[in-house]
Image 1 (cartoon, rainbow over the protein chains, first blue to last red):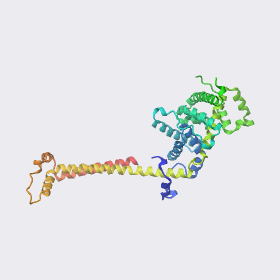
Image 2: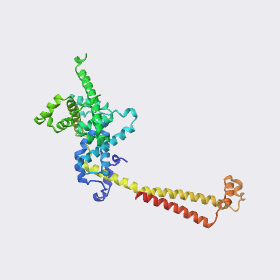
Image 3: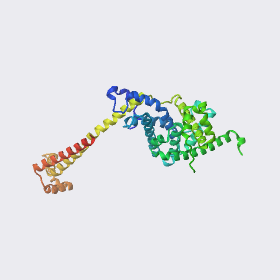
Image 4: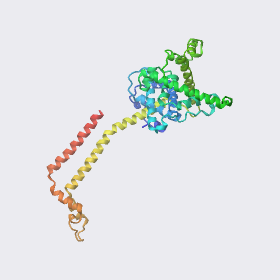
Length: 201
Length: 186
């Protein structure tokens, strides 16, 4: 059962009072609101970029919070809770990839989508550069790079989220970064050649 | 590919994320990145990703986009948890119910086989009005009836005590099964 299957109508028809309805979640509603406000946007950005689909990110964000609320956490530390949430989201994304046919697993679906009113040349180029390049990286490389450079997570935090040894992060990140830079350079060169035909040799 | 690294990589990322990079307080780390190839790469990658993150945040502000409120997610989670709890609670009952159906069916079949001669006789009498000529006994026109007629005398214990013992055994089996399910849930 996915949380996205629950409709607003069902929520409205639920006659149980707030107190009676509260299940044994590890945090109360107020604490959850604060936590959600601080983590929902970064989590959505992470999921939408590693999956390449905003719609899928919408679903998985809600599912991640649902699983997070039901989990038994070892600590109330905010950093630990955030890492746990991101790990849950990463596992859900991996479940999604596992269900895909093998050849589609490494490809992000709609990384080229740009908001309709935001099609300035700079944005389109920037987005398509990073989008195209991310789409050509392996899922784990996307996860590593996003966590390291967009989230600013430390190697230890990345290891916790991705379920790998902290010692391996440095090497994996280095390799992923080299690949990213190579692809970005190639992509930039292609763009410059496209807009300035005189650069064509 | 040789792993080249610098101890200040994280500092570069932190400076960029906090906005310190572009200010006078970021002068020192900028100068370091200018002479350190690793940190220059890290700075370039981090800038790309931070622009990507900003763009993602912009997408969330577009009409029709946006995340559900914390309250809605909370309520949905509550409802989903309640549903899951209900399903978990009902599971042992469903299992016991199924086991009861299976045992009931088995008992009915057993009784049917055991008492088939008598049942066949009742059916024969019920289907044949007095004014019509009687058919021959069931065993003579039904191969399955004949088989059951042969089987019935061979049944070892056609006594009330056996029937009682068989019922008690079935009941005890069901109870043990139910107790096991409840214990497992606890």
